[in-house]
Amino acid sequence: MYCGRCGARVEEEQKFCTACGSPVTAATVAQQGRIEKHLKLLAILWLVISVMRLIPGIGLLFLGRLGFPFIPPHVRPLVLPLAAIGGVFLIATAAAGIIVGWGLLERASWARILAIILGIIALIHVPFGTALGIYTLWVLLPAQSEEEYRRLSRAV
Image (cartoon, rainbow, N blue to C red):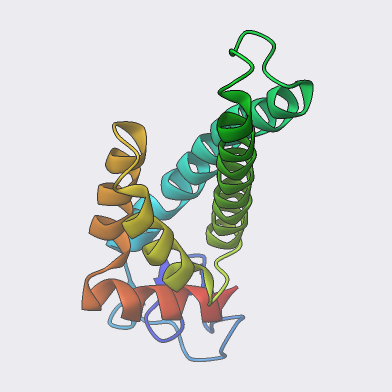
């Protein structure tokens, strides 16, 4: 059960909420909301996808430093900088995704907005990024989600 005022978890035998001090009655106890049902799964998915994105990013950086020996010499001046830029981009987005996953697990107040922004960006990464972006927006974008997430982040 959860406190209807602040969203903190309360036990059935409690008379007052330990987080906000409000009295716990049958009328003030709220059930688990939509956000809370999906928040942990969403955070874990962000962490997994981001770690998977690190692998090709690091690979592009290392292969770029090795000079891509299988690429013809006349094409290397074009390919090597592009590989480095792609590797840096993948590592940066992976780092941002790891931060979002951690922030959602911790229910940080800033994590919802950053997850929405990264969810929009992830829509172009077919197929897994698109699925994660749609799921992120479905969970976090509605107005009720903003209110519930604020309540959950204050409860922690």
